[in-house]
Every structure is written in C-alpha cells, then in structure tokens.
Length: 116
Image (cartoon, rainbow, N blue to C red; front, side, top):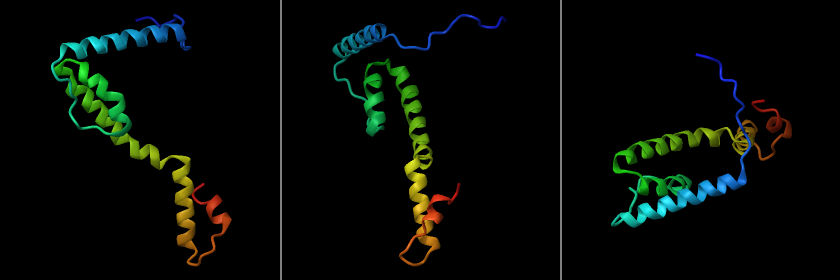
C-alpha cells in the first residue's frame, strides 16, 4: 500500500451541492410515486425523525432496519452531548452552589470555580 498523496478538497462547492440536492430530491419523489402508501415506522422523534424519515421511506425494505439502528445509536449519544454543554455545566455548578450553601445566598466563587 502507498500513502495517499492526492489533495482532498475540504471546501463545499455551492453549485455542486445544489445539483446533488436536486438529484436527491428528484430520486425521493420518484420513489414516493412508486410506492402505494409510503410510511416510516414510528420509532424516531424530534430532529432525528425529521432527518431520517425521508430516507427510511425511500430506501429498499432490506435497508430500513440498518438506517433505523443508526438513528437510534445517534439518539443514545444525545444525552451525553447535553450533559457536556456549557449550559449544563453552568446549571450543575449553580445547583451544587445552592446545595453547598444551605441558605438562599450563593457565593459567586462557588459557581465560577466549581468543577474547573
């Protein structure tokens, strides 16, 4: 094996992206026209449903479960992302500050340095 030396373009060409988007949309409409009653199983919700359902509807039946499994795997990672968000960290520090000080006053230092 040789080391890959070709240049990889990391910038998005808006014209090519729009062309690809149009082709995918046309493919979707053609597949929807071929099916009697296109429905995706109701196993996803929220943004994942919005992203994956159009794909699940048009793929062959033998690929649906693979795509659904991938979407569920993404859903499992979502709580960990929320726990690591800046908002979550600030809230946790604030809550721990209240717990540490049994009164109603919160020392700013206990919030700003907690866990850091």
